[in-house]
Length: 417
Ligand code: EPU
Image 1 (cartoon, protein in one colour):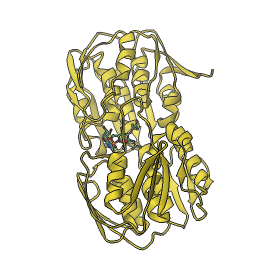
Image 2: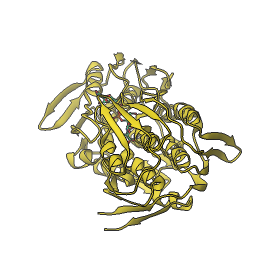
Image 3: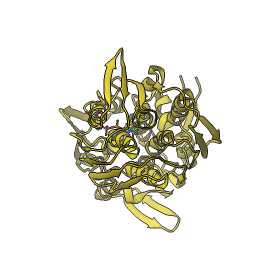
């Protein structure tokens, strides 16, 4: 298995460009199922998860043309309505085909995703909403099967603001009969991005980005061309990289407007963040202050940045309490950070991090995507050599992070198995 080897201690200095957002690209690719015409997407990140979604679309019978960052998706010849276990188990975002396949073809079969490293992550809210819209849903042999005539618009209340759940039902509602109102909907920027793309395709969606979204069903959708926004979590990860190494990084294509919670917390611990003409400059200072963090749905502090900020708090000058409210098992990186000398105690949903003067390099294992990023950050700041194994998690969601870090001055290399 490939691993990443880092000799820590270098300040990261220079410029980095942020790639397209993984969690926006995936639903936008799924949205292409809603029209017979060809959608074109630009700024698609070159990632393993995107490859997996392409495989899924091809499996359904779609055709995909184009290079790495611009793709054209043609779903005219879809003749298969099933997302198989092999694909869903490698990427749970495969469930995003549920809503669009059901809306356009009236039937769908999707393998139930199992639990994953960060939590149980059920899809009960997606299914309950589809049932409320008139679908007949059954679960058998590990698969969800749903069928419906034309779905009916209705009022849906999500018990939890689920991101992919909101996206799935928003897509389904575009072709439903009448008006669908989603209450307690997810407000994430990726939901807004999907609504913007769907509206470009001729959908009628209002107030995405708030917790009540209204969708007026239309008869059909047409093609659209769309440029995917930059990835806020990748940008956030580089902001922390500047902070944790006392570096000075100009982040180009940095979606600062979606990073308020992180920006405010970083400023509190002494990181300077300034908008410039060509990007956002982030300057880390010594010592790193400590701060408490609670993850919450957007606009709260993103759970996808929790592991990275914890690496930084491990070398802060005081104590910080980091509370994970979104997923029940997202502290897998703690044991690995401890191997590097971090002083972290878990009490229920909170990690109590007592900052140490430095971390020391060690062999560690990545357990999920954001945990991997946290270990890379810890490694570039640590004394000595860190070897991160199971880095395939990183390739799922960060476009060439090793090369980008290296260009900024990190002593980092990917070692092929
Ligand atoms: N939940 C339920 N029932 C459901 C759906 C969700 O109980 O039917 C619970 C989940 O178990 C979780 C909470 O609701 O405790 C929120 O989960 P959500 O559904 O919002 O997560 P998701 O849609 O599966 C997306 C991102 C994740 C990100 C979360 C939270 C994509 C493809 N994935 O997942 O991204 O952490 O929202 O912001 O958009 C990542 O990129 O590393 C990643 C994990």
